[in-house]
Length: 346
Image (cartoon, rainbow, N blue to C red):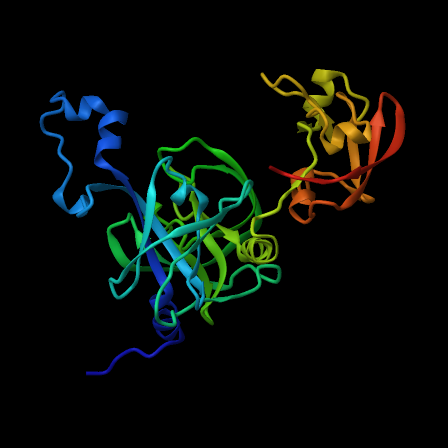
């Protein structure tokens, strides 16, 4: 019987062995304390399935996907997959072998986490590609552990957009968060696929499956792999992920905000405490030490304009702690220049 031979099938066979399931567990006694009504007969039909309780009395409370990027057992996944307070984590390989997982680092800004497992054998890996040179229309595959139930799930699509900024939910029971610089794809990404690789036709990871826009069809997002590569280098060099801190809150200025707040211009980033925050400038932060003040409008970052397409957060994404930044600032009607030395976010 003839069989289809295609580059996509070849790529799936190449990548799949390095895609893992990440299992999140908690002791059943801790769950009794957290949700006592569940165990006191108020929900008589509610029971924890036997297959969710391991031999140590731990209950599986969540899960997602990940992928091995180094033969020594380094794994990339999403931060929200391994963010359970008091939880323990294990990794199930494609061949059903299971390993306890150590969390090496969680990115304080992006939805990225780095895990490590110890295996006595050389592990398969996914090669890391380059997300800087991606083009619209490239074929991509999202691979993972869909819904935490169906292993070896693959969906095909194209790159639908680049440098997307959305308020998205990593999971349908989590609050929305601002996510910037994302790769948009129409390849199906489900909650259990979180942390799995988005790969190109050559089997290189160009993103980490991260977010779904609920209520919309075929709109899914991945974190560019270059951000994960930066985090991996930080962990190797410093033992942690180092992200820069400026230390201010701001709103992007447009015509509506200009009229509402009686501003002199309709572009730039207005330094303001926004809603219920107590201060616009974090005390003793780089912004404070540089002399920035509330109601300043930041116009440029090292000579480049600050716009809705390239905000302060986007510039910070390309910066490192210790970098010196020259800000062009409009204060009242005077344009001034301030030098800021970025600190490390704790």
